[in-house]
Structures are given as C-alpha cells and as structure tokens.
Length: 310
Length: 248
Ligand SMILES: Nc1ncnc2c1ncn2[C@@H]1O[C@H](COP(=O)(O)OP(=O)(O)OP(=O)(O)O)[C@@H](O)[C@H]1O
Ligand SMILES: [Mg+2]
Image 1 (cartoon, each protein chain N blue to C red):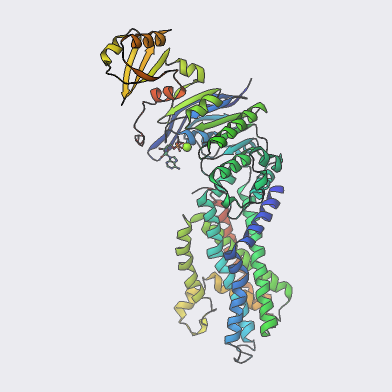
Image 2 (image 1 turned 90 degrees about the horizontal axis):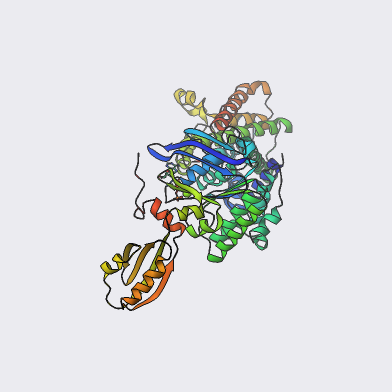
C-alpha cells in the first residue's frame, strides 16, 4: 500500500523559535494518524507544512505523491482541512458557506449531505455568527468534508465540543475512515487519541518523541499497573514499598497510588495490603493509558511552562 | 469559473446585508447631491464656462465616492477578512488569489457603479443637472475612475499591516487628495507650488476626467487625465496582485 503522506527531516522556525525540528514520519493510506503533544509542541505547524499552507525551512514532504508547496493547487483539490483557528466572511449563513466551499472544488460534493453528516441540516438558514461554539466547529468540519477528500486534516477536532458532540465527532472520524479516506488529527484528549487513532505520534518541543500504535505505546511503559485506594487507618509507606513487585508509591492526600510491575503483582499487592490490616476504601486496579505514556514521554512539565526558545 | 460565480454571488449578497457598506456605496453620494443641490438652489445657473453648478459638482462628488471606496471600504473589507482568518480558510481550498480578487472587484465595482447611477439620477431628476457628453464617454470615464480607485484599495490592503492602519493611512491620503482635487476649493486660486503638487493627485485627474466627460469636452483635451488615471490603475493593480497575502 502506498503511503498517503511522508515527511522527511522537516524543520520549521519562526524567527528564533524552532517550532519543528528534524521530524520524519509516514502516514499510511486509510489510517487515522494522531498527533498529540503539549501546547506549542509544533502540532499545528507540522500539519500546516503537510497541507501546503506553510513552507518548511528544510526537509521534504510528499502528500498523495505531490509536493504540498509547489503543487499546492493540485493537492488542495484532494485534501480537506479543518484549521485550529479559522473564520468565515461576516454575515454568511450556514447553507451559503457549505455551498460556497463545494463550489471551490473541481469535484463538487453535496453540500446538503455534508450538513447532514455533521447534524446541521436544520440550521441551514442560520447566520454563522449566531451558531454556538460547538455548532461552528461542526460547520468547519463539514467544510473540510464537502468535496469527499482523500486525506482529511483535523486540527483539534473536538476542542469546544460537549461530551455528546465529541462522541458524534468520533463517529464522524470512524465514518470518514470507513469510506476509505486517511485522517490526520491533533488532539489534547488522550482518550480521544486512544479510541480513534491507529497510530499516534507524540510531539514535544518540535520533535517526535514517540510514534507507534496505541497498544504498543502503552506496552512500552512495561507491564505496569496501578493499585489505587483511599486509606482510612494509618499506613506505613515503607512497608508497602517493600512488597515484591512495587515500583513506586505516590500519595495525593488520602489517596495512595501504588505502581506495580509483573504478572499477577496487582492481585498479590492487594492481598498483602489486606493482611496488614489497614482499612481502605475505593480500591481500583488501573491499566496505564495513553495519558501515562504522554506524561512519561513529554517529561510532564508544569502546565503553562513555555517551550524554551532556541 | 464555478468558483468565481459562486464567490461573486455570495459577496454581492453579503454586501447588501451590510448596512455600512450599503450606506457608503449607495446612500451617501445621493445624500451629498441633495445637500449640495439645496445649498446652491439660488446660485446662478451658469458658473464657469457656461456650466451649471450641479453639472460642475456632480462628477466631482462621483469621483470623491470612488476615492472613499478605494481608501476605506476596500482595504477595511480585505484586511478584516485577513485578520479574522477568513482568507486563511479560503487559502486551504484550491481557490486562486486572482479568482478571489476578481470576484471581490466585480462586486465592489457593481456597487460603485450602482451608487453612481443613483447619484446621477438624483442630480438630473431632482436638481436639473444636464449632461452634454455622450453617455458612452461618461460611462467609460466612470468605469476607469472606479477601477483605478478600487485597484488603489486592493494595493493598500496588500501592503498595509492591519485594518487599524488603513484608517490612519486612509485619512492621511484622503484629506490632501480631497483638498487638492478642486472638489472643495478651486485650484485656480491656489499658489503655483500647491498646484504643482496637485498635479500628482489622482483624484484631481479623476474629477477633471469625469467632469469633462459629463460636460462633453472632446477626448483630445483629456489625454493627460486619462493617462494619469490609467497609470494609477496599472500601478495599483500590479502591487495588489504581486503583494497579495492570505494571512497576517
Ligand atoms: N505564526 C507564528 N509566528 C511565530 N511563532 C509561531 C507562529 N505559529 C506558531 N508559533 C510558535 O511555534 C511553536 C509551535 O506552535 P504550534 O502552533 O505549531 O504548536 P501546537 O502544538 O499546535 O500548540 P497548541 O496545542 O497550543 O495548538 C510555538 O512556540 C508557537 O509560539
Ligand atoms: Mg495547534
């Protein structure tokens, strides 16, 4: 199978800010490829380089066999783009927007069908300015899909959507994939990436720090499990730490999280805890998630800490 | 072609929905004619060269409206679309800058000419203006003037950084343009130095051209004016196309 897009040694700077540095990866045809990373990691920048909206300083990009910068018009006929921030002309209505966008492509899709797909068919006559944030977001998704593109780029697809809207958007992504298109999306929600993506690239400070299927990324943390509980009586941390298979003991107030490793360890630790006679409540054994991989790989810097400038 | 038609049709609808745009393009100029007409109701019918006051002033008001469209309406419209990210979203489609510009120009031009029609109608029906020039030359002069100032507007939009700066630059250009156009005070009473500077004022040439066409002056006496307005159009259009930017 030919790959839908490939990026080789791509770098992009804004003045002294190194937004993307020496990044390479391949996106396979028909897959849902996720890009995650903290704010400022370079997700939007790399996406825009692939879409042909920005010219990389260095490196080579191919999308559907085309150079996104030099052959941008040919490429734009075949890709659909939802930008992180975008707007439409003032006073435009929902139906007018999809009709216009359908008319901009050689392969004119069905504007009505696009509105139905995102659940906006009954808002056709509404002014775009009067839509709620989530409805606006859905309209922009419709604009990215109206011409049935081969590759769809969704930059923060579900930011601003309510839980139901988010689930609808996930269904939409699965539907796009089932129709054979390739999807490239960025997200801040690890649960979303875990559910939707065939493969995920974790970005940090402009570089890819991990790239694999969700399953393998999680497995890369080792056979770690977490036993979490709220203790009621006194608890000797050292005694817990001394139990076989325990890697780490963390406390958040009354809540204790014991990280354990090795097959069957979680069960043995639970039994051992019961034997120590400590009263505890709300015990749960958790599998690591993509979020744990994310925190481990991006060094879990404090929120709001800016990327260092080069 | 489908993209062009769809975009032009949409822009036309949006322009009609925008009260500011309707006011400046369609209502302001006729209102000025009414004000002028009422103020000069008792003035002698013939001012200079046997031309009536209204026939002298009507073409000047028309040229002034074109200049305002070019200095304010066009750059503010384009820059607002650039600043909000509207152009960026369009950039992610196969739409070419030239197609976008052509559709927008067509709508602005139609709007300017519609405003001109209203203005002339009010002058002729309400205040007894009487064009003696051929309708074809009046239309040609109006088209040329409108295109030149629209092009000026798109070139300003291309080089200026923000919609706020267009207000400043627009005013900086509008005041001397208007003052040195002969539309407010006759240039004949000004010192030679001022008149030399005024020779570089495109609005002066547009006013003279429209006035000449309206009052039936022969083309041969308007060569300089035609050349000046065409020069503005060509220079501004080149800048507008060469420096067009989708994003801030
Ligand atoms: N147009 C620009 N001009 C200058 N610097 C920019 C520009 N766009 C992005 N940057 C910088 O480049 C870096 C990467 O930005 P980018 O938008 O790609 O990050 P991101 O991963 O998409 O972040 P977020 O999750 O917040 O959307 C940041 O440090 C940002 O400040
Ligand atoms: Mg981003």
